[in-house]
Length: 325
Ligand SMILES: [Mn+2]
Image (tube, rainbow, N blue to C red; front, top):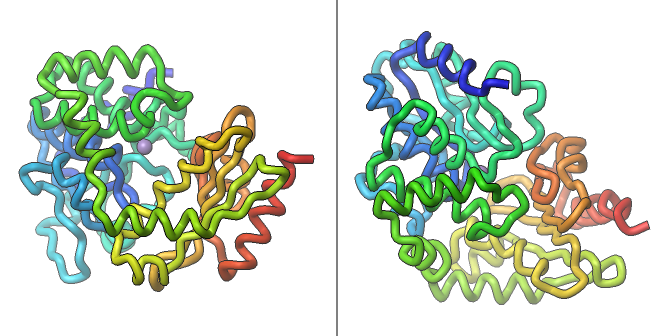
């Protein structure tokens, strides 16, 4: 399949674009947005980035010029009827949050660029490449395809996105394509150790306290093969750490010998209870997420639950039990 046919058609049809990514934006969504905006501008297009949630401060280095606009209910976008939208790093419209719901009646069209499972029905008319390590990888390859060299800013943004989504080039979708692109970005001046420090050695004390609280909720299930952690609004209040900083702790239990699944049941103040699942090997949690209205990859997926915290926990353990019979 030539993934670029859909993209070229869309670019030939419209001239003004809004770029957005998922709620709780991560370096992959942010990096892809910054580089993709530059790409659109170089093609002579008009482009704005509008996100539903603010950029976490530790990731602000990805947007050094403060280009990303944070949505608010009262914002006025001139000639909104002329705009078409690019959604990056999610294929779940509910996951784009307030921005999308506010503009969806006015905009002309929507195009998705993503690497998550769950959007199989959308692959034919969008640009969804589930084997890509990251959306930043897809955007980097898109620039290569069009013969456009990213600026240092865009190169750094893309590199940060790739590092984050591959866990420093170690998750299963890391491929030769990933390394070739990373080599190009480093040749453009990106300093790998600086990006590593920005993303991984930049924690606040509040974030570390939140991690300690979350680890103290640890439950061991299925003979030590599955670990469950909790992240509650009370923990956020007590530590004053950002919710998104708690979410990443789901990866910690996978460092334990014999653990093949990690589950996080989480809730931000006023929001729904959510479930995140991480696994090793062939345990496919995308299926569980999709069956519950969510999405993700085989080894990393999640969904929003209609139930309270305890019921959600019991139900996800029941779903996961299929792997441990
Ligand atoms: Mn991603």
